Length: 109
Image 1: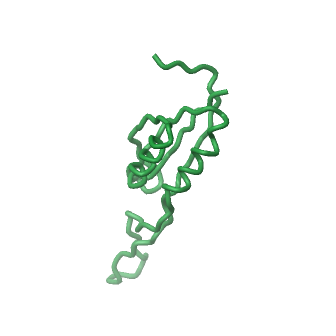
Image 2: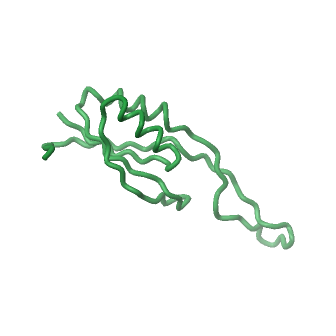
């Protein structure tokens, strides 16, 4: 059975992931998207695979999509502490989110 991997990746990891997928014979459709938490750009890749290729694609994603710390883009101003300035918290971002969906029918035209 075919699978559709809906793979959400940070923009900076996309070139390396697309190169790795292509080198290993996988195709992907790239869609621009925006994350809800930090409101920063990310990319959604649609990757069609055979069921037995899932582990290989997951390994490529793990290899190329790394977690990293990034400053939160909304500064926090301590309530009642005038003059101390805003502080930016760091949050852990990166990696990938992958949804695996069964595909009933697939045709390349």
